[in-house]
Length: 215
Image 1 (cartoon, rainbow, N blue to C red):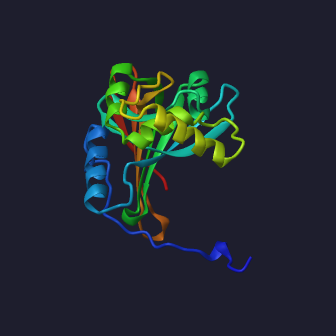
Image 2 (cartoon, rainbow, N blue to C red; image 1 turned 45 degrees about the vertical axis):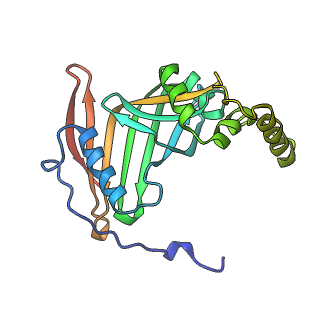
């Protein structure tokens, strides 16, 4: 190789993250960090890596966009017939990862995923740009495609078909919500002595156990 990637280095440094200083509720800690990412002009702070696995345990990961979060969990939208949708039908366990390199921070969240109320999905679909609404109809996400021309032509035809009309809601498209049972907040520090604070949900009382992990 022209450049030796083994010699690539980044110097990490950030505010100290301590198990005694974090919010006792992880969603409040997430909200605090997420707002800091927004205020720091991080590029697409709501971008997250979604990792799923098939029934046989074969993993798959991709970037998606977070569209809502609250005490119930983290919501994203997709085609239910996509690779991620089929994985989640077979195995509802998944993980999401937010990485904000400018802040030397990442958040890993593990949980179980389920489809959200179709009424909520329909309401969000109506808010999407018209081009995105049409794309949801004409793209059989994750299926083999003959060529780009076919996709673009299908887009033009559907656009003409819906001219002057509201794009209908596709029943095969909608939201998922990941309900967390584990959070890990990672703050980069010098000499690779990073701070890692984990929240684990205790099923017996639905309370969060907070502990520090070695980097």
